[in-house]
Image 1 (cartoon, rainbow, N blue to C red):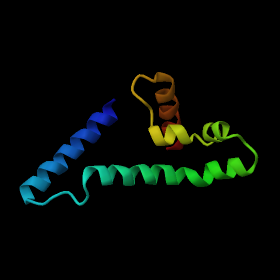
Image 2: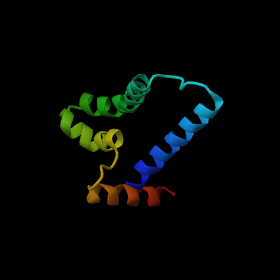
Image 3: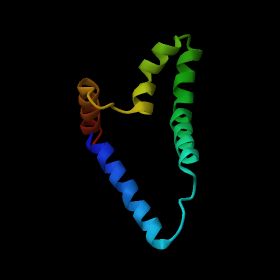
Length: 93
């Protein structure tokens, strides 16, 4: 949940800076969100596609490549998923 609050805070800060500079955001919010969704989904095409080419079912391919977790992130209240992400983050450092 902390990540969501920090993200919202960063967005509000940038909005205030834009307002003080009297400029508009570079993209309408819906266009920007659609672009971000496209980036997240696009990152998963190759890994999931490789699994599908190997004969794995779509659901299993998404699970094996952790595509769903990457696109959606750890959802609030999903303690098991958050623990997995935290363990992965500490082991990669």
